[in-house]
Structure formats: C-alpha cells, structure tokens
Image 1: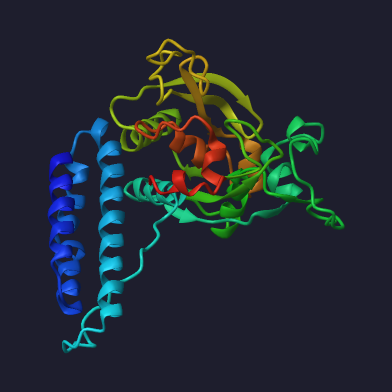
Image 2: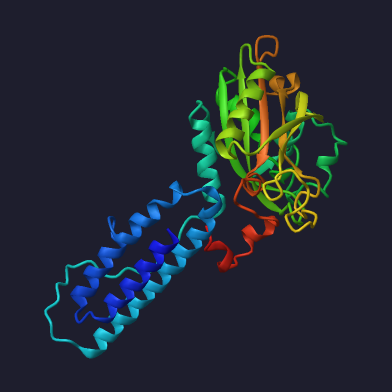
Length: 350
C-alpha cells in the first residue's frame, strides 16, 4: 500500500505538469478523487490492512491527498492566468475545496450507538442542565454524599425548586435512569442507552470539565447479574477487539447493589505498566484502567421511578466516551485533553 500511494503521487504529479486545459484538469481530478477514482479505491482498502500498519498508511494517504490537491489547485491557477482560449463546459464539476471530517468523539458515539442498537437498546439523550433530585436524590444518594459537594459538581446560581432542589450541570448520565422510567410511564421493559454531555470540575491527563458519557439501563422481569456480564463482555469484544482483556472489581455505588467497577488493560502498554523503552506508562501507571461503574439497579432507584422492585429487576452501567476511546487499541492517546485542544495537527490524524 505504501508503494502504491507513492506511485500514484508521482504519476499524477507528472500528468498534472503536462495538462494544457482546465477541462483536462477537471477530468484528472475525477480520475483520482472521484467515487471510483484511483485514490478513493486505495483509501477504501485501508480497513483491510493489519491494524498495526493502518495509522502509518492513513497518515501517508492524508499527505498524498493534500499534495495532489495542492498541485491541482496551483495548476488551475496557472491555467487561469494564461487565459487559454479553449472552450469550457461550465456544467462540468468544479474542483471542490477540501472537506472536513467528523471529530474522533463523534465517531466514537456513532460506533457505540451502533453496537448497542444491534442488541435492542434504544438511543436516548437526556438534559445537560438537571435538578438535584434526578442527579442525586432519586439515585439513592444521601445529602452528605461526597459527589454532592461543590468541589465535585457544578451548581447553577438559580433559585431551587421546591420539589426537585437545586439546579446543576448534570454530573453523569445516570440522572436519565429515572427520567426514562417516567417517560415509559413506569411500565417495563426498559432498554436504554443514554448519551449526553456531563460536567465535573476536574482537569488532568484523564479528566476534563466537560465530557461525554453513555449510560446503559435495562429493567424487566428476571434480569440478573449474568445479563449484565454478558452485555459488558459483548461491548468489550465489539468495541475494543479480542486482544484486550477486562476484569471486574467489587465496589460500592449508591444506585446499584451489588456494584462493581469494570477495568480494561491499557491500550498503550497492554497491561504491562511499562512501555517498550522501559519507561513507566504515564497513562495507566499499572497496566489497568478503570472503564466505568456497573451493577444491579438499587430497589430505591426503581422505587423513585415508580417501578415495583418485587416484580422487576434491572442493571445499569455508565462509562465516559473519551476515556473509553482512549483505551481502544491503536488510538494510543495518553492525554484526554488533546481531544479538546483544537490542535489541527492532532485532529487531522483521525
């Protein structure tokens, strides 16, 4: 593939130099970049390459495309300056300006939604500005819970609601659990994937004040921990690939019982804790990364959603999309802040 891209670049640049008319230049552009063009076909074959070489080939392909588009643009200007007298078909497709592409976070969201749609989850999007009751109270969090401290949550300077308390920037997508139960008029089954922006006052290698999270919620008769485990294993296999491993650790969350945290081996050092040069992996430090929390829905949360916990059970999980994508094999991101740094050199890689 490397050699094919180089050959295409050299032959096209040579062909550009010999063009004498704008019509021929437009035809050359379609020959290279059209829907069945030579470069387009090469680009479509990249996913068939081994994973370890895709980043290198993708970077080279972007470079070749920019060089050829620039050469065609310069040639077009030269032809215009010469004011050639050939007849021009004004209906012929013009040379289009370079187009942008989706942000890496948007791509991750689309991939996650598609994975869960395959097993019957409905995609939801609940509000970013939330009431304290939905964010904490309905999730069985007591008044003195650390997450309700203003060091952990952004509170909005507005008069509180007599029924729902203070207004906050939603700290997690878990606030959508009870809203989903209400939307379905407390009549299971519930099978939801809620994706939304969340806000917490943190800023370091693995945290940003604004981030995206996806929340899974299933409520029905006979739901147990094996259904949760099977769903998590399915997602890990589909999203991360067979070379990655997960582990479960018992934990405590107010809104699930029993609860656990899901860990995945680091996508940079693959669980070793050290890089190939012997240095410690600064992203994971130990070989494993926390993927997110999960567990069986607490009876008090079902009660808040007006669902009888004697008849119904459920499971829930919530993970950060940015952190999840950073743990994906081949991404090799060691600082989550790069995603929102607006560095064009970084963004053009994806």
